[in-house]
Length: 88
Image (cartoon, rainbow, N blue to C red; front, side, top):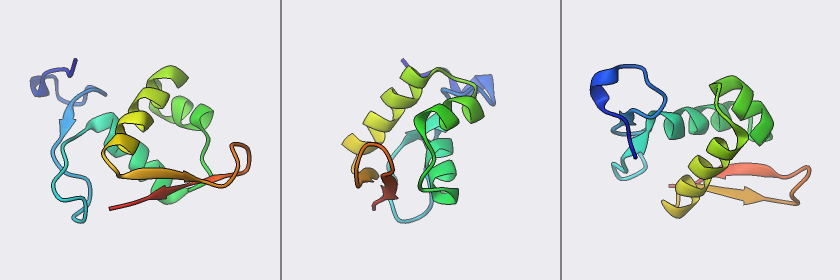
């Protein structure tokens, strides 16, 4: 589950909103950071996100799945050489 917001900068902490165009969807801090990294580089890989965030690739995949389910993220192009698209 989600960690308590009292823990401050914990990776699992809730970040209330990412940007202004997502309709106020609640995101974890990790999901918010993933969107920030993708906004900087739409070709960023799961391995690179794992390294930048200090979490496992499986955790990155789980967070990305959540962002896709919320309609905030999609993958374009082939698995290798494709890119991320942030949707609203």
